[in-house]
Image (tube, rainbow, N blue to C red; front, side, top):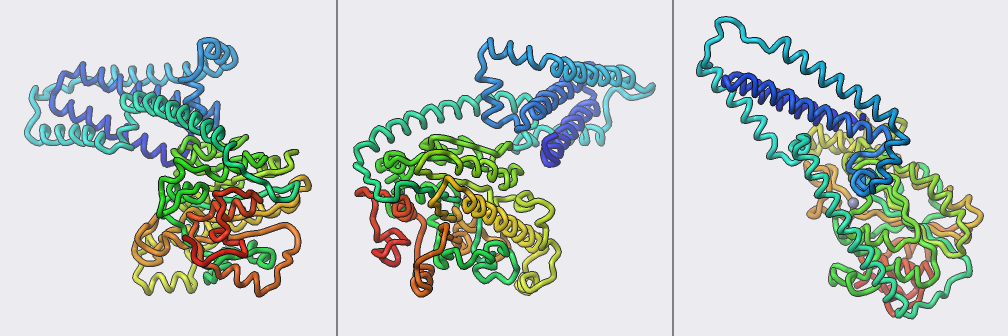
Length: 507
Ligand SMILES: [Zn+2]
């Protein structure tokens, strides 16, 4: 019910499990016991599928999603009674289906599990070899963590342990954030901006700027942003500090830098400072909730909205889901607003990151495909590149829609927007590889865009000079504090890419 990928995994497990049990038959193990084992295992798999299917039907969420886990494991007896009272019809229907399936299985087992006359008591050598091989394969499957999870006897204990761990982590995060905010009152932040102000900070995911036509890529991957080119500052020389999400975002939004990676533990982050300066903060995300240090940042917000129904960054959840929430948040009454929008962008798998209408480069025969072919890139890399470029085209559309939403908002004015990707991506740019890369320049080549509503008073020469500035995003917190109009001893204008006091490059 969730997706083809989950169905395939479950089917592979069932196939191997039953083949393993059939192997025991070939080894002439006790027939009754093997039959009972088969019935128990297949019933458990059916029960598991029923529970997961039921949860998905009810919540539209993967069972591991924190919301679902909370509902199953965090409810008290009263809530459980209420739940049964409201869903008893569904529960009865689903249970009846399960009982029928198990009954059918038992019937098949009884009817067909007979010994053919003349079958020798001991198997021959070939049967023994085959039988052991089949059972060994089933056992070996458990060494693969993802496949082992398909076994209900592995899955549910893990599920419980994961949940406990996540609860403990979130409790710890909440107390850290409370401490941070209490401390923040002593930072003596001063607000020097306009009385009303909104900043939308859009955090991209796995976007390499060299795949944007806005930065000169031969494929037309950013038509909508190109149409807004005159309203944008398009920074050409920006690198991410890291090639992975958590490390990079942590350095963008906190005082941590490559030189001082632990500074975020002792010094205040942008969100804590913005809160003390009177901003209403919203964290709007299409990524996973409870994801390590990112959750610590999210907890600083007054409001957290997670729109991703799946589990992890591998889930299919299109970024357009963010738009209606953004529209509502921008209409909020607070005079000063900071909205962090965390996109799923082009995170692996690329083919899950865009709807069919944006599938424009699959099978393309153009300058890019020729270059890749001449560089000796194999078929699977060229295919990944086409899918990645489709994801770029879709990101262009979502970003443009976000800009339109900000532009049309009447309550969030004046409003500006900063877009930056957490890191780049290698998709056959330098070698036969696709994914995160900390060893190629492609892992760090990111776009940085700045937009503000209304005409930009800066002359063209100043804009061009700004766009050419050399920057690394572990200093982005200074740019953000500058944009937010926050003055504190933690703000250094020489590290603010938009400041007239900027020193090139920072650090
Ligand atoms: Zn990332």
